[in-house]
Image (cartoon, rainbow, N blue to C red; front, side):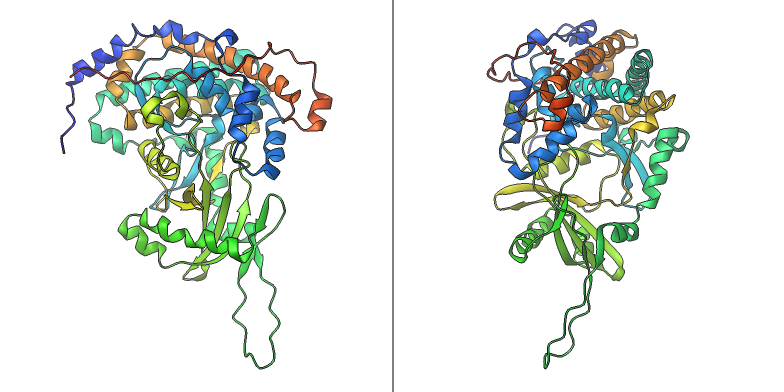
Length: 478
């Protein structure tokens, strides 16, 4: 095994500065619909292949709710759009679906609540600015939905970018292990974040028992058969969003837990071994994930007061994979997500792992263990700007942990050139998303009620889908 050769700090920073010749910071504002090589509606159609057909109507309904709802479900559209633009070649681990509702609270391995990026279905290594552009665009769209004026949305996006820049420069000055240990300590002072943390405090395992399950009806005792085993709780059913699986299907899900167990560290395998599964259900979650297979398992450890909920979530390839050459090569997609999450998060779920069921690949994690996320109404007034600042710091930490803060600092510099450019991009791409949203409302995917209410479409004529552009990482010479 050879040890990777690492350049001295000054050369790594110089490499970042040299990437300005590849893409000037001012050029990061570029967005023209004429650059498109993939039609948005076609991209959505391709992303639906392999999903449960009966559930796709739910996905389209959630996307039809608002432009921000459409944006949440349209990662394949933005991935294709970003891939045709010039990029820096400075790669980090991407969240891939960086938007304001994909940050939230959850319980750390030591039991305390943390706030961080918490959705990694699209994670992959790619140009760092792709995350920045998606997160900044989400600030604009979410702000508009919350009723914030356009000027306030733009200022919040600028705060996000300046927070990212300030944090990257701070990380570039730190020892590497200090970056790995870095925590954000002022969470309670950020009003929208403190509201999320209060919700997360209430989302205890016992609270989830009451919310997700019900007491199993007692079985009739047959004559001569003796006492029946004690009844236990089972999942509540509200089809099609949640329903219990028939025994054969439930068994295939439970059988996959042995493979999942192997993905855990040995000491965590020991903890998991002390839980016994009691019930399995299918569940519909999110917006972008609707139509994928998603199972939840109810387990108990030391009695009914020790519940554990696992989510077994199907993971197709990242929407960015077609544009990233070897980085998008086939791999176990559940493992991709788990490893990307561990790379970016300060603390990750103690039971994070992966498995396979019927040749489909899944991420496994705890479900709703003190989890909570921001609501759009929390972003009204000054909440959007406060939240944007925190988002910038957390994204920069994830990028510094998984990339090279020195190279990033070298490219970003200390001026507002990149800030102004990405804000301009975010505003333009938010406008484009609103046009795409109206186009979507007139498409075959939109619910009939949404099509009736839609205004006349204003989107440009669609372009035929072309071959994917492959993005390559630039590396400093050694």
